Length: 199
Length: 199
Image 1 (cartoon, chains in turn blue, green):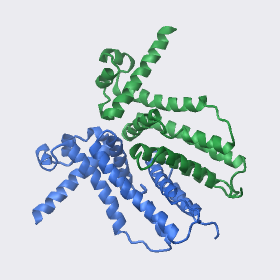
Image 2 (cartoon, chains in turn cyan, blue):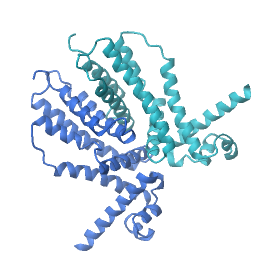
Image 3 (cartoon, one colour):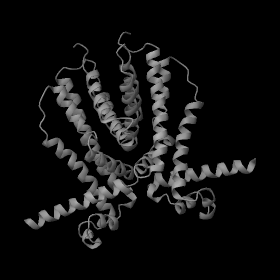
Image 4 (cartoon, one colour):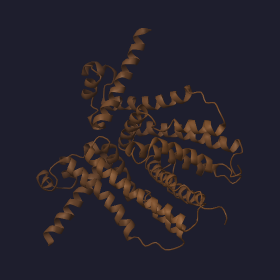
């Protein structure tokens, strides 16, 4: 079905044009008209895929979350468990330019979702998916008996998840103050402090 | 100079109306016209104070940061040092409704600042002010000899600051998933883990 494939591709091109408009000019400029121009399409053919701006925004936001999940699913992790966990968590961080743009656009979507119940539902779902990855890391530390007996799993999940998102946001806002290397060093240090201090 | 005082009051009313519009409808709705309506002023009298929307946004963003600083300066902290530090850090968290709205509006400003160099400069300044408070807490732990000798101050400042902002954002996005009590428990736990494990 070559026709269907083309439609999917076209939608992705439109979503990527939406990211571009948001990253360069802000989410309030991501109108159907501006996005059509950035995607080099007519307003009419864009409306063939997305009738309204909310639909366009929802699809564009969803595509970011799919890209993140895909990258995680496709990556092969090898090495000692702590190093693997570290690399899984690094995937959440905006350490290259593509991920930085994704994160900037995601921040705009997030702010917008505060006043848009539809985007908030999607945000909630992504929040729970990402929290699930962090939860898996924390529970692996427990299964591997890397942590002390009084380890408070639930508090540690919230702590690590908040830490990751805080680092990501600080990096895109103040890359000079919080570098990629420092983000990585903080996550590495955090995982080490979670483990028993016995060598 | 009662005239001057009235002017200041009027600007604050306008800024608070701007927050209200942003919190209820999003930053893209915070036009001079909509804010004038929310402040029950004519567009003409609003323009007497703020000629352009960027000016209005900058002042409204600045007022949030001033409110936070003021609250910190006016609070009297008493008690054991760790408890005082904890309370200082709690001031950064959206634990009541006013602070929640401030934080929501701040998130919108932050997303906007990614495409507005003027707001980004203000964001940068506030970032450094808040980081300074975190830095003071970390350096107090060192001076009080609460921490081990190999304590890495710079990494710990970034870790604590990212943790606080991550918690605050997770709470305003998903209050059901991350409650006020959990935010507090995480900060308290974090401070404890920073201290030497000898008592």
